[in-house]
Image (tube, rainbow, N blue to C red):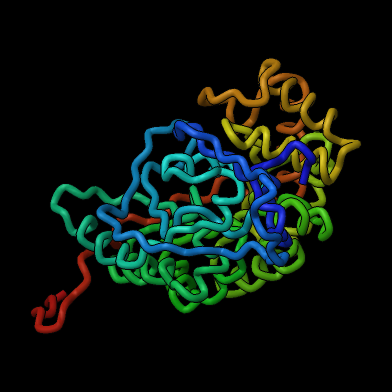
Length: 362
């Protein structure tokens, strides 16, 4: 933690956390500062624990019109993510809840049990038009709290019953738990999974994405999913220039060897509160790389740390971004990885039968 940081109580230990600060969200009228006025009794050192609250979901499907995304709808079983990836572009979404995109994003989580029933109601609406649903777009559906809350499992059971196409994005290996659902859906052309690997360096991974399974374990998950017939896309995401960009080809090769059939990449994104969080992390953990990383990011975004424009926010522009794109294209061709995968089936979608329903003759 930097000397300038006064947003965290001094007795708290941040082991297994990515952020080093907990500044108030941009919508809050007041800033929080922890100060010792000499009156407080010293407290015993303690580990910062994860807190989970429940939300009663009023809707399940979120729609978007982004031309950068290959889907127009998603479901998020959780808000916030315990994985604690310092680079996570979704951190600013916690500000809409009155919470900090810093430590709050990875320690003050919201589970949405009951979302399966809400989703089923939305799928059954007469106006509903079937298209693939994305899971894992804002918070990882297989983050550690899924083990106890099982909200992702709840969503999958509904999509299985309706034979609805879906695409999963995750860093969590708990996806293996749901192979009993995913394997039959994959055989019917209804599902694919994206596994994100940022680095093959276990020490760097543990520091940068502290509660994510190590890279070797994620490669093993690719192998298990592939062996079960589930098509897996490796996501080299994000590529951090000056820190992990040299690993682009090795990650693709390792994923291909594990059974991945497709690949994608995204350049590091630093929207809003993510930029200072990432800069603090660089200065603390890899101070010799800070200037190079930030300079390369600015080079790819016209002198800024982030360009939110469609078509540029995911890839950047300029010489460095173009070289990355060329390296990726050559590597996937060499490894025989697809970009993109074939479309998921939509024609199997139907309302699940209920007890007492008359069986169809054909």
